[in-house]
Image (cartoon, rainbow, N blue to C red; front, side, top):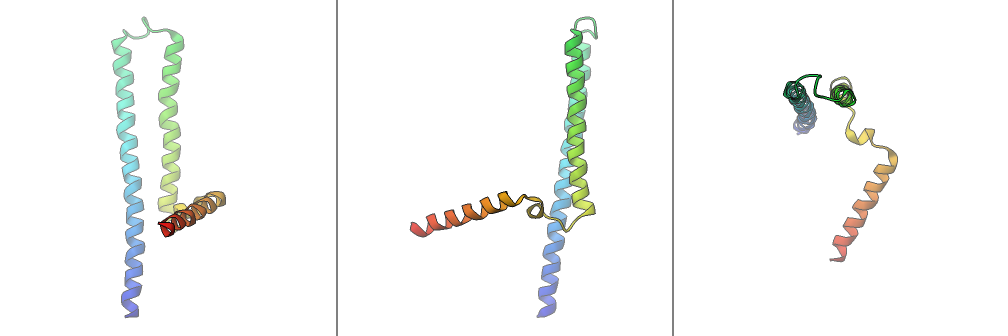
Length: 119
């Protein structure tokens, strides 16, 4: 009996970790697809507008900056996500929440439970 419950707990932990890894790979896939699309848009817009001749230099700078910042910042978020999933698998999103959010969630749950009790 005790061994079955231990296996059940281990299975739940393994299943939870699997879900976290799957979410990371989904995040990575979306990152790659969106950045390929952005790169394609950059190339097509550049060739559509005739290269540098028809486009204002200020627009070119703005456009180039935005197309660099998006993958860099998103990549930083993806890196942090990967570190949390693979390096610190025991950490949960609940562990990373600030205390004021935890307290707010607890108050809201109590409030909702009270509303249901009154019905």
